[in-house]
Length: 267
Image 1 (cartoon, helix red, strand yellow):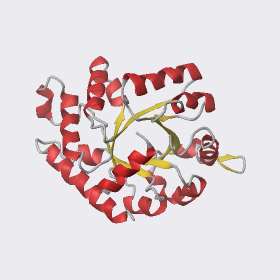
Image 2 (cartoon, one colour):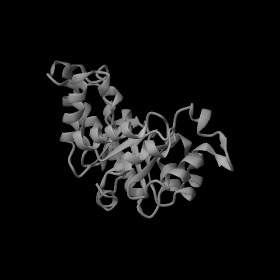
Image 3 (tube, helix red, strand yellow):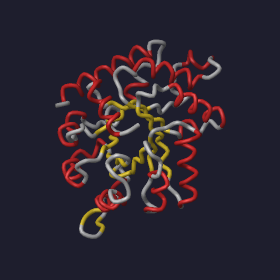
């Protein structure tokens, strides 16, 4: 998906909501466990319930890899089921030496039809560039994350600034605003003004709204650019809005509430 297509979807739906399919088989409604494919069946119903209110889905691959072969099969079926109108993110946090990253890119961009993948920048340019070589695909680089451990490295001094600032500035030279996004955690809202000044044109994937306590209003006010420029991810708040048989109905209600709030912030 190109940047223009993504922006068009955001403007048309008046939504920059990304629904996180972090599907934990121990948390899905018990009545689905009798299904031959409980994880996929859960995802299918969540997608049907939320697709009118979001522009993107993010699959955290760890929840699927933990199940072995059946998990990978559920992930592939889920990616194929998501409409092509929606931006499909593999939250895989890959990144290794060049030839290994090349295989990761092939796995998620060719074998599975994802539009984007999250990538760790620690090993530098040659570990990231294989992902950037795919036309119409996106690399979403970890910038400033929501977890408490972000202070261990990301917020430490590096040269004339902080390490996360060096990551943003350096990586901006590897890709462009057409194929490179950054992960910026919603709980780091105090930093958003500075981050937007450093990277005025890039999109951000923003996890941490909802169950983790990030403020949608504050993020929207500080991080938007002329193309909106943010995808705000909500996972548990939507997919586990109910653990009963009404889980899809409740997911619809929460997703719609996010969309209505977002519509009010879009200029």
